[in-house]
Image 1 (cartoon, helix red, strand yellow):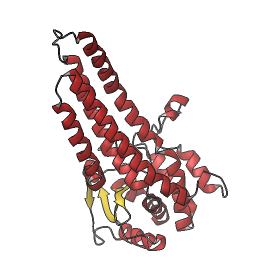
Image 2 (tube, rainbow, N blue to C red; image 1 turned 180 degrees about the vertical axis):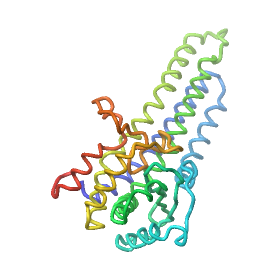
Image 3 (cartoon, rainbow, N blue to C red; image 1 turned 90 degrees about the vertical axis):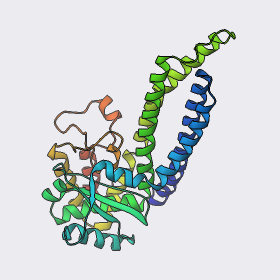
Length: 303
């Protein structure tokens, strides 16, 4: 997979995801409007799906940064972080992203935003504490590569839409168990039961589908961002060493949640102490660190 094909694919995936979200919410609204015999539910679903698509495009980066507890910083407060980000942005031919810091001892980082001109890079204080300059350059280059590869819009939109679908489905599921339209005098009782079952099944499967969408965007893009970062810094050993330190730390981010896990350079929920079985690997949002380090330190290895 080339950088340009990845960029085009990310644009296509973003629009496909937003369209799929629209259809899913519409389907949920239609099913439950039939269950409750209230067309207003469908109208509300249309409004909500449109509003959430707009919000996920224009405001998702701000929401994600707030969720992570990130604070914007200045050059004076974090000169090395700022200078590294600025120098690598110039090298990559990218506008300087906004720089944020998360007060958390667990080492990690992520990039967010809707495009290259509206992007941000966030790192934890724990990351700054354990990495030397070469390692920090590797991490920042990795995050800038996500920006350059157009990963950030797709990754950020997923946070909002996955979280909302999960909440919406849970709400519908609770409504389904409470009971729908019980007026069976018009002979619609059997159909009503069928619609109720379909609604409950749909509400149960929606969060699962959302998680699968989240996982589908995760793994290959990390290898590609690693490779891009190695080209940007001309020193793959820096990122490889940083990944090793991050993985060995073992701490979990205080404000991490499963909706945002795929954004980070390393899974904030990863089990650093136990071996991963086949089932666990299937639901990992990131490829194993040892595979990423091996790819970085093995010239010519495919991703």
